Amino acid sequence: MDYQTALLRARVMRELRSFLTEVGYLEVDTPALSPDLIPENHLDVFRTRFEPPTADSQELYLIPSPEVYLKRLLAEGYGNIFQIARCYRNGEAVGRLHNPEFTMLEWYSLGADYRASLDTALELLQYLSKQVAPTVEVMRREPLTLTVEEAFRRHLGFSLAEALERNRLRPALLEAGLNPRRFESTEELVNFAMVDRIEPSLPNDRAVALLDYPKQIPTLAREIPGTPWCERWELYLGGVELANCYTEETDHLKVAQFFASQEQAKRARKAEHTVDRRYPELFQDAFPACSGAALGVDRLVLAFSEKQSLDEVIYFPFSATV
Amino acid sequence: MVRAGAISKGMVLLMKDEPYVVTEREFVNPGKGSAFVRLKLKSLRSGQVLRETLKSNESAEEADVYDKDGQFLYADEAGYHFMDAENYEQYVIEREGLEEKGSYMKEGDTYRIMMWENRPIDIVLPLKMTFTVVEAEEAIKGDTVTGANKVVTIETGRQVKVPLFIKPGDKVLVNTETGEYVERVNS
Image: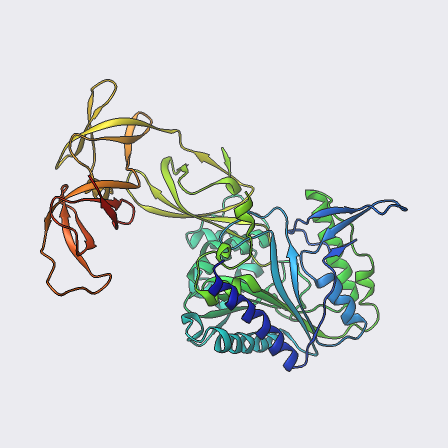
């Protein structure tokens, strides 16, 4: 990383803290090591061992996101909180947009839903670009907000809601000229369509928020009653996925259900970490209604520096070691 | 077979029964889902561009291609005529999609030819090649703006943007992927 980019990076960090602190969030600093995690089928984690001299050794994990700790603080009544955390994900290829160790901003807003969090995220981006990168092209245009349903209609020419209801997503994708090969589950088909057609079609000259994802993609996002959707968004900047957010599911039965399904899916792959058993219990007593968002800080610096690869915006990128 | 997660730029894959070279590769992890690899490929036969999205645990078939040396004889309407450096057999490679490469080739020189199913399908040029400048305008006197360029013609007939101090007869190193001037070569 060159010195100019290092300066920019330092200023992004400082202004992130300044903005969130100013609007009433408490900065917290929870551990990077954890004895148990939230099961997420698609994330591989780094394992390590704690070997105390006087007791049995214990398996520990590097956090793939600080959620496991931040949710405990929320249950304890900490209110609006944020953390800028080093996060670790195993099993992902190292590339232009991926490094196994990366920096994530995660923040939780009490009493807010995902749309309120989107406003906060866009204000945060505006504020940051004004402070640290006033000339950056991608922040000059009005952000575009559209639902996943609108994106399917616009870029694939059919209604996702209808295709889901009539259970004909696969043929609809084939008709739209995609080649879904042997993808079967709705989750796989939707993700494939997003990666293959929708993401590359989104304008890359501005911030773009995609809202309302299908329920069939299992997450801890709250469902929107009477619709096929969950209260969730993903934010793209310069065509790169930058942040995602949910209105958090607080119904403890639904949280337990999510845990069970993810654990089962994960076992089918490989059992790889112990699960935080206390987590679903957090929701038995009144867990505060809130919305949580996570933003890739390295990718943000990448966008603001108008560089090409994460290698140019993080210290000692992993690619340099392999 | 190669796992999609291990596909790299420059690899030649068999798609729709034709060899395609990978020109771009990007790993994508959708919000909450397993990893995909997004590829941009170029047909080695027609130059046609293809986009493919594979799940990173899917497999793709590598095309069984290999290189051999061929001496470039001449170009005509039929295409580029080469002679096999080992058995002296002559063959033609069609121009379609190769005009850009053709503009760098010097008659009599030997190049790497990519073969597939015993057919020549691509010409592999060195990334940087040296050329003699055959035509250049005089630099305009007093034009000392740093970074100013002019256009010269190299021995193959191709035009290249170079700094003002380059004269006819000079040798220049050119990047054959971008067409850009690299440096003057002292001979």
